[in-house]
Length: 100
Image (cartoon, rainbow, N blue to C red; front, side, top):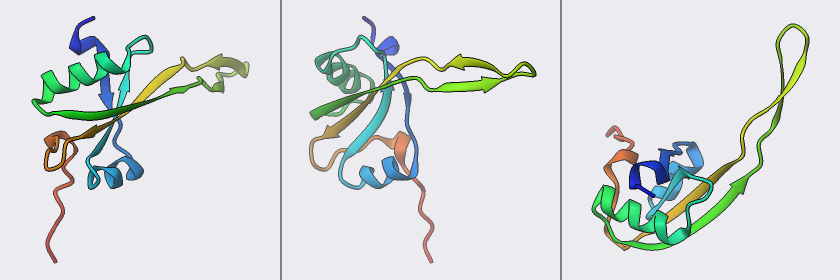
């Protein structure tokens, strides 16, 4: 499996941006990717050293859409929290804090 197909997108929320200060970065990943594949993909794409990977499966939710109130299902997903070695960071998650 290629690195580009393992990591789908970064998850940028208030909680994930708070974890960046601890060196933990959150990504949406392919459902069949293993922790080892995720770690190797992050290391190759962002040129960092991965210390730990934690994964969570997210069940797709039901949504009611349309005029006929049809029930549709969102697809299942997988989230990975990647902890980097101390002192390393990924520029994609920089917040650009303003000085006061």
